[in-house]
View (cartoon, rainbow, N blue to C red):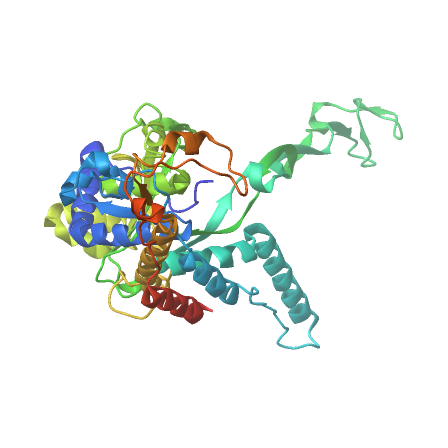
Length: 485
């Protein structure tokens, strides 16, 4: 599935290391803002799947359950903390997201091509072929699923990037037989003796018509020529135009870039099986290993791995072990202006090799492939909201705080309901509580009571006031629900 393009520039080891270091330094300038972006995206994606009772850990650079935080931080006794009490969440964030997604992805846009001249058979045939190509493109890329994925990224990440290119893949698109053509020698006329009297040609040195013997001077050599013919059959993998969508965890742009044309670089990073890259780049097999180094933050790798391995289903560390068997496959597109960070001598060689911009593929920090390629030919980006720079809020960003407030209100109500049963205190000298606890409760059951004083029996018991819900909190929660509807 490698993308065809210009042949590799063939960088030597030192130049490859310089390019890797150049891209690393260029990307690292925005690490601080990138960390804040990762935090917001992780919160949006986790909330979408219902993992909402979490707090951000600066040490781990990830959201962790509140039960993982010791109560002693807040001055409480850890042993007295009610960690076993369940917490509840009414997933308003996802419900709103699915409503918005259903509107955005209600139906794919239709594309039809019409002939410029309906009376021109060539125009009619061209328009029909174009419509057939559109149908093939829709079947290959499943436009309905792409629209749903776009809506999801716009709601949780506020951004998506579409990678459009031609992919050759035998397993995915099948193969075809193509003839192998070659030049083959073909005989025009065989070797023969030509009679000088009658002009007849014969394979033996004698003219059958004139009845004379022909000498060596009458021999005409065999005449041949080169003709192109099929010499064999070659099985060739088919290809097709493919669109892959990625969110802000996988694609990184400069924070100041308002659109793709202002982006100095575009980084696409994924965690893959090392065997996949070894199959794609067999000449780099010995250099490809499981390593976490490379371009970007270590937190990015952790965030991608946890979301891809469904960490929302269980604890905060789901997927952490899985990434030990993966290598970060990074594809970087840089514009020629980035090379001006280097000294003139090194810059000139790179500008000559990559006049349109450079494409560099890495496994960790090992350069796998490089070629002259412009990111404008392969990428389309879309932001959810207008704004400055590439790090903009998502559609669902405003719902995160609303979801937090709703969770707090709902949890308070559930806690009140859980503790609403009043407690009864009794004088142990008057009542045998063990006998009452062990007896079978029946209507009209009589229990013996010992009167210690002359006071009424009721004075020996006291019932606590049951907890009640806060009407204002209930009203606020209901108001949030009605606003959502």
